[in-house]
Length: 161
Image 1: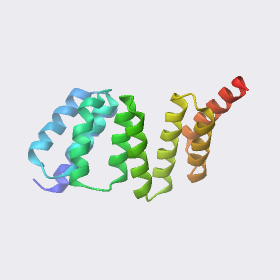
Image 2: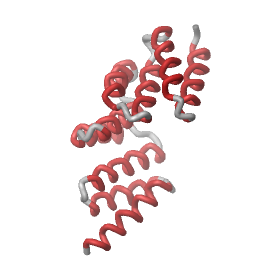
Image 3: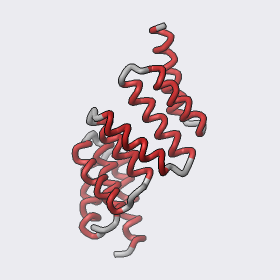
Image 4: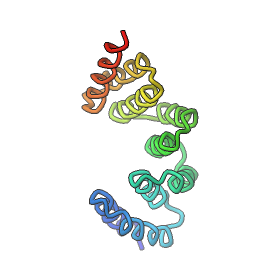
């Protein structure tokens, strides 16, 4: 199989995941792992599928394998951070968000990272730092989720003031 075939497989699996048909997407990606064991994409996408289906314990080893196959990839670091965040491992999540920021090459990626860091602070009831990171996300680009999160952080700050 060639890489164009892999791309079709990945797109099919992503569509299944978006439809929340995680089992079918998982089957597709597990088969892709067998056919493309040296390509990071099946590992990465299966990791993302597990995150989206609330299974961060399954996601982390796959994402770490993707990181080995494609080092210094911002998207992989973001997903590893999200998986650790889901597990409640905030320090590990911060560490991977820092790695992601170091290699982020677009405003969109930086906005996602800053928004996610803001969410970590928000979970810790540190609304001032949450607000700071949501504002950083908005300074990178008009990122709607960051705008909504900033409004929420401001609401909590008003309540506790």
